[in-house]
Length: 94
Image (tube, rainbow, N blue to C red; front, side, top):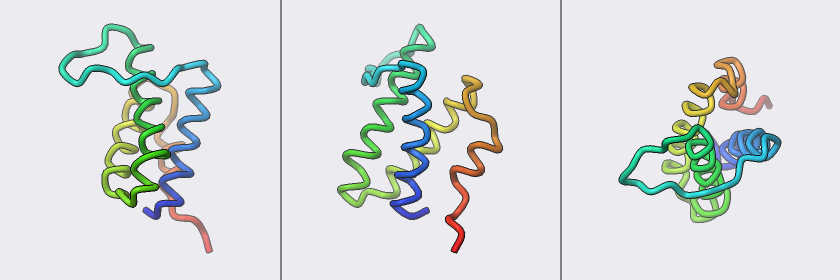
C-alpha cells in the first residue's frame, strides 16, 4: 500500500469519526477502556498519528499496521462493513 493510499484510507476513517463527533484522545497503554467512546477516541488519535507523524516521517509500515488496527476496531464497533474496508485498501486503478 502506498503512502498516498494509506493517507486516503486514514482520512476516510477520520472523517467517519469526526462526523460522529468523536474527539481524538490518547488512551493509556497499560489499561482497557471502559467506554466505547474511549476506544473510538483512541482510534481517532491513532489516525492523527498516521496522518501527521508516521507518513511524513516515511514510517509507512507502522502506519499500515496502525491503520489495520483502526479498521478492525471500526468493524468491531459496527461502523464499517468488510466491503467498505476492502474498498479502502484496494489499490488505486490506473
